[in-house]
Image (cartoon, rainbow, N blue to C red; front, top):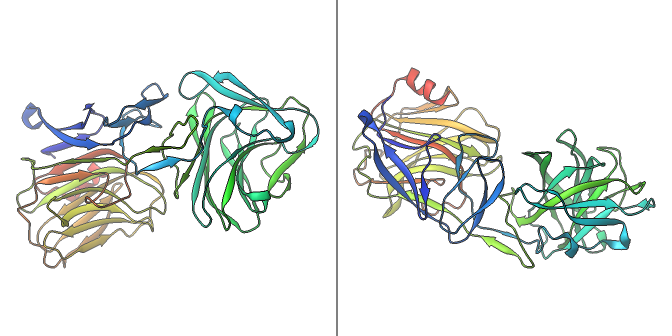
Length: 427
């Protein structure tokens, strides 16, 4: 299965403005640099498992949940929480909690996490709040890094003025599991997630929207995963003055899923979008057959391109692989302007998937996903090979695609692979 173009697969080399692909046929290494753009700083999880900031224009190889790393590509997002780590700038209504800065090592490896503790034994809320500016009928992703202290449950909430509407979720920080969903008024919670960041830290996330404009991001201490006493959507209980948790890195962003952490200090901060492509490449297919292979990350319910082979001057002509919003995998063949779509039979969970597409000839395309033949199309039309294609793009499927996809591995084979080879490649 010799291939002439490789990117990733645990072999990463990056510098400002570039991420390196290569051709290593016959043990002859030839570098093939991808151009990379992002006009802002951003964060990643490094090999040591710590969150760190990467400078403007430098690609991010992220090692969250894997030792081989993946190229992290994300759309532009803004953290609307103006003080993401300084919780002394948050409201502590009625002195229901105390917050002590620099009480634990945070996910960035510094002694800068805050302890949130019950202030008294009164029955009621044990909360910390931040005023936000947001819009009605809009999906927002709320996230915060939390670690168990003497208390093991927290509630994460999006609230409107006077707490008339609220969407929230309770999280179990001991078992890393989701608890009760609590809704008040006209509000929806479409998703919730708890991710392990190591050393006892979890990133807790909810995706919520309210029918009236939200104005508060709130963290509550809770005393149970389910069956909580609550008022106006907020957990209530009688504390003993000793319950506490550790918090760090709060984020509110408009969108249907959470992206990498964006630190703020007194004002909202925007991380700009990223692109990565390579143009006029000598190692491109010059005729059928050829194979495109990618290991990309699918976000449930989100359409995102993984890669494309095309002519940048005419982005509506391409070969590409796409994760669809209905959780299918699509192989797209449009070399002459007529789109031929091959759709997987199966639907797929979120996470990384291995996909290979054999473009066999003018009429036939095969799609393999995670070791299985998912679909074959034998009636492609207006599908003659386009010899003007010399450009590759990754993380999207053509230049105007707005939804990015994280990439572990991307390869091009300038020849046919057998069914057994395609199965082995994607297993």
